[in-house]
Length: 350
Ligand SMILES: C[S@@+](CC[C@H](N)C(=O)[O-])C[C@H]1O[C@@H](n2cnc3c(N)ncnc32)[C@H](O)[C@@H]1O
Image (cartoon, rainbow, N blue to C red; front, side):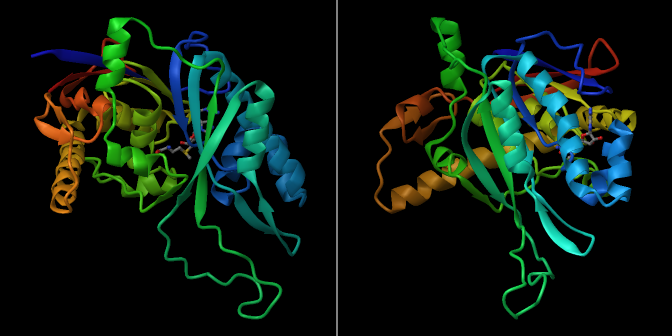
């Protein structure tokens, strides 16, 4: 049976200068930066540029906001340098609201990031609004139930999508085979390529580090997993310059992609490696559920009289479209420490 190997490197370093990564060597970037003007990230931004802290103390939020985006902008420049032409960058970002000097204000980071990515030379694609599950007790901010001073509640974040031109081409039998094996299911296509994602859930990550995940504002596993499968093929290299708890590394392993992560906190990097080394079982559980969801979809559709014209030989189930015939979900066979301390190796097979 064929066995594949992927390599995952984690650098405890500053993503404003990703000197360990060659220019034009990465196929996809999936990331979520610290969000400007969200209080939990003030200290981090102040470490990156002490002037930011002074502007916050001086009640100069607009100047602080601009400098925060200036720091993120250095990473976006690096993202452009390391992406291959045709490579894609997906940035999960939320806007922030904050009351400064008695005035309640919105800081629209999604539009600031869009503008700076376009200035760098990226082409922007339609974005996804990710509606978070929220039981917000503060639905009515401002003047409660009296007009006109109440504010709409922020319950969504954005996934902005950019491409470094020109469009990627696939040539030769090998590349075309990998591309068709990396197909997703018809029903996933309909859900994943919708511009509104709701009820996106996490996955049991094999570690009881819920507190760390909360403190580092981790995104649910499903977010990088979908994006990696939508915008890259097996064997590609995925980069997350703001790796945090390593959700992108785990999603890359489950998707049979290589990965690189940058994270400035050394302690988080060690945890990512520890967590990944223990991840085989929970990642396979996730992949089995993905296959089971397809089987349930087939069963329900057949009950309703829908016909499936194609058959997937790898897995032995019916599929809706021609390209899904080659779709191949390989399980994670094992995960090992790599040759250097900051790398891990994963093996994959059917
Ligand atoms: C929003 S969190 C990312 C969470 C991640 N998506 C996850 O699922 O765990 C942002 C991370 O970026 C890191 N960070 C911020 N600025 C950085 C920089 N210049 N270089 C590298 N890492 C940075 C922070 O330490 C933090 O862990």
